[in-house]
Every structure is written in structure tokens, then in C-alpha cells.
Length: 72
Image (cartoon, rainbow, N blue to C red):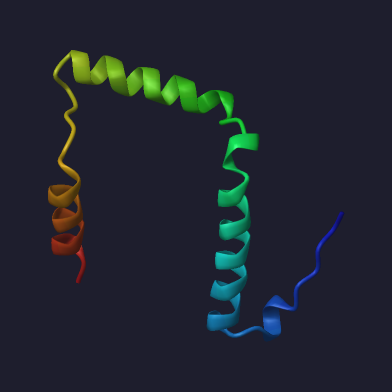
């Protein structure tokens, strides 16, 4: 079913509201969605890199701070 939105005439705020509405709806039905096959491959590669000591996990608060620090 094609969906048509007047994107050219919508404000940024309106576009964000549409995105939030779609995300909220998807979130309510997350149990009905399957991740794409490539997700498993990426996770397997990351796990292998962690086991080899090439990658590491950061604590969430430290990761958020690092992201904030990198913003202009």
C-alpha cells in the first residue's frame, strides 16, 4: 500500500512528529519483527573481535559522554 505524504510542504517539526508516530507504532509490535540475516553476521563478527581483544564494550554512561564530547 503506497503512502503519500506532502514532504515538500511539511515542516521539520511535522516530519519529526510523523517519524515519532511510526517509531512508536513499530515499538509496540517489536515482537512481530525479525532482525535481518545480516544482523547475526555483524554480531558474530563483533563477538569474535571482542574475543580477539580488538574491540571492547563501553559503559553506557561513558559512551554517551564520549558522544557528547565529540559534538561541536
